[in-house]
Image 1 (cartoon, rainbow, N blue to C red):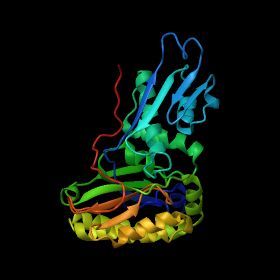
Image 2 (spheres, helix red, strand yellow):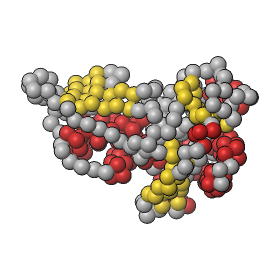
Image 3 (cartoon, rainbow, N blue to C red):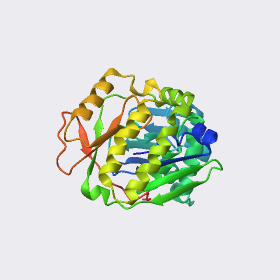
Length: 304
């Protein structure tokens, strides 16, 4: 909702501090791991990875799915089968799906190995591992989806992370939706551009401070209007955020729609989902959308 780009490690290094206001939503990613008794894992010594494609390999280093590979490289399990799915389009969506999958993989393997990690420890390890495949990954990604609830997260230069959990009354009065643009992209290129223009993100942090004050005072109308303001600021940081013509058209449609109170693009930019707020039951747009709510759980798992 607020503070995106200030969680970029280069922003925190330069200014000493970053912060976001966000909520984890009730759309989930799912990971299942299984070791067979006599089959591809045990007999053939193969790692099987099932997602939008299927991979079979005898070596972890040959796995092409980046989130799965970096987690397996860390835990070094014997051959097993990993299956991945989600409640919404995940690849290039701007919904921190890579972080969510890495969080889930870590949780799965700790359960599989009968070890315990807290949600914060899972998020910390998740960020370390994701940084190996995306050095521009923001800190809000693993912590935002790995720690449930509506919250302000603060990131200090000393690498400490602080949480302030917020009252959810806002969501009793206004309804959040995710609007799919139909555009997916590789966030790495956009994040590189954002990092090269990181000084331009400073006003985004100033708006977060103001939004936080309005939220504490329950000035929800002002809070939601500041989402529009911070989205404008985000677009001004670099041109690649709105490089796609269709994305610009959707942005304009949402801006002109009377049932949309506020909106902003999720993630790095140039595709994925818009977060839209409206009055309950009033949103009327000619675009694919799904109503979402705040998810209070973090990373959850079980064994069979």
